[in-house]
Length: 157
Image 1: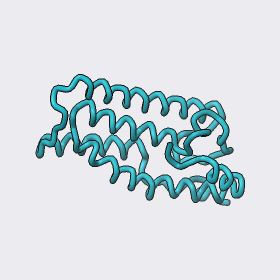
Image 2: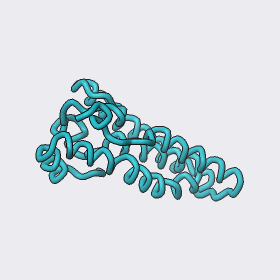
Image 3: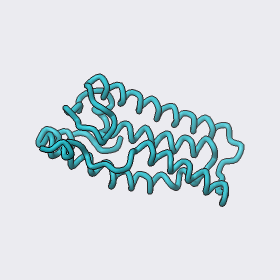
Image 4: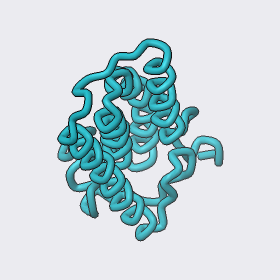
């Protein structure tokens, strides 16, 4: 296996994808306002809860990866599977679930429906351009061990 094959063929960094989606939602909101639940303190609290939950899940996944000497950058090689550790027991993509929760939370907190409407297309791009490429790489690298993990743990929570 060459050095260029020993990683997922990921071309879009997930944090950049989600940040771009949030910023696009803010721009569209400025041009074509689509607010919801104006003035709702409950909406803001719910949004903050989503953001904090997303950051918490992402941090838990990041710490799990670092503890096993893995780089969270999907363009770097994966030295081992970590299926039974941390949030990876519940979802194969806890960092992406966390980023999605953050985007949803920001949209909810600011009453920006565009950020919420952009979440499904963002997840579609993430799935096609990142997750499917990571899964193909992990299948090549770890074979049956990864396929067994994939059969036991869902892609999303």
